[in-house]
Picture 1 (cartoon, helix red, strand yellow):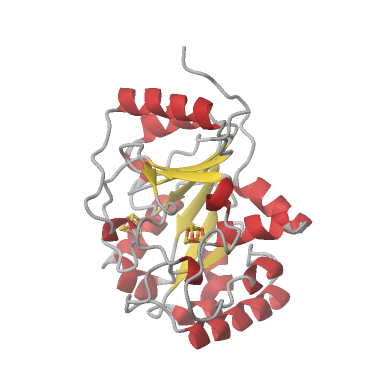
Picture 2 (cartoon, rainbow, N blue to C red):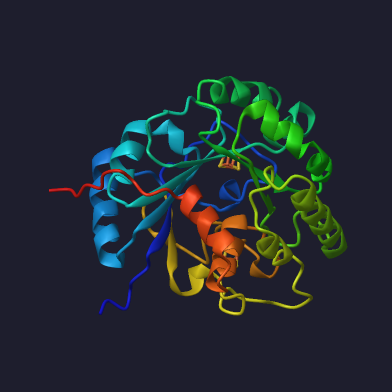
Length: 292
Ligand code: SF4
Ligand code: SF4
């Protein structure tokens, strides 16, 4: 038995990104890893896939769609994939993968976090995709907390299948991080939205309640039974392991806001809706290949 088995992995496929988001966890980590060439990345990722027995891969960055050819080739090595993109560059429509597009509100709120003109540019690229072929991913921060009221209209306007909502993952020093009370109030709003618009919010109610602050003091990924404790591993753009997870060295487990992690925990507790959601977000590929 391989004690290193990690069936889930996230990969920073590039360290480049056209945006400078105020809530970016990636740019907080310094120094950012140097990128590998396409050939070296592909060969190493294939070795990692075999060594860790990785079946499910999450492609992040930076902006993964800046390396579309490599993305296509690398994803073909895994049976399930999902991509997180800002939609600031064209998104290929033939990736056979789940697609999470980061949209943090309509123009005013999105651009406040992601830069002037970002919403219009993202919508221009989203319009090239078939409707219902992607999900929105919205990160709540102190700057866009009122976006919850707009989520039904945002999903309708973009043509997404729904929206997956998370909270900014950062050290408590970040000016964008919500206080425990603010976060608790927003979770109540999200639970109400889930009742009123069950097709808009993709998060399960059970996973939403897991966002409630865990109280004062340090809590580790082990305490929280996060998949990054024993089943998942994250790699930077040089394919070196990242600790504690894809959110980098400043990730604060006590205030983890990652919706995918919460759905994994919910699935572990036997919630079939969380299982269905994760299968939909990370769809099974039609064909998986290996490098010769
Ligand atoms: S799009 Fe993502 S990687 Fe790029 S700056 Fe924004 S949060 Fe960071
Ligand atoms: S920040 Fe969240 S996803 Fe990262 S290791 Fe901690 S609990 Fe897991």
